[in-house]
Length: 222
Image 1: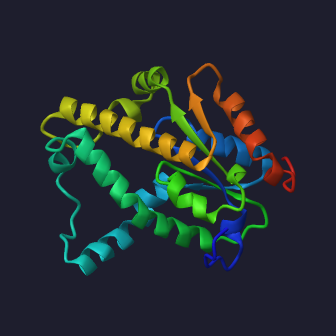
Image 2: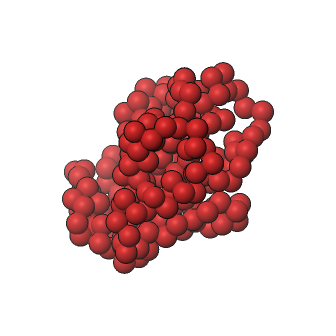
């Protein structure tokens, strides 16, 4: 692990689940945490809510508009490639906020941090072992399954002038961001699991727990 400020040792002990949208990261993290009595850090919840003040403060410091961009600008007027590039470019700044959150935790057991913004190239410098991270990405068939069966995946719940185009852009963007996560993980030697739906969430969680086994041994199953 690199020389990173870590006053309570929370980063040193953390376990990381990165990857793609709709691959079951949150469910897997919660199943493992429930079995072993760990703490879960949900990236999406913190990023969408807890980090908003920091996002606004950064815009002020940079002289940018304080308000979020108009929904059409985000979801309709751009193409998926531009959207993906913008998303990937924003992850490093957002990751620093994640590290601040995790530094504030004091936990004698590992915390499991999960989320699509936990990019392999950002997490890797923190790791003392590659077994502290795993990346989950859906196969194309499983992505289609999630889009059909998860309301929050199949519908973009924002007011836009062209909902069909916005949703298509979102799906294509998420595919590109997922491919980037898998490629970077493999380049760095971090394990990737392609979730194809043949295993249920409990079985996927068991596979991930086996990967994390050296660090779960100190935890007591509950």
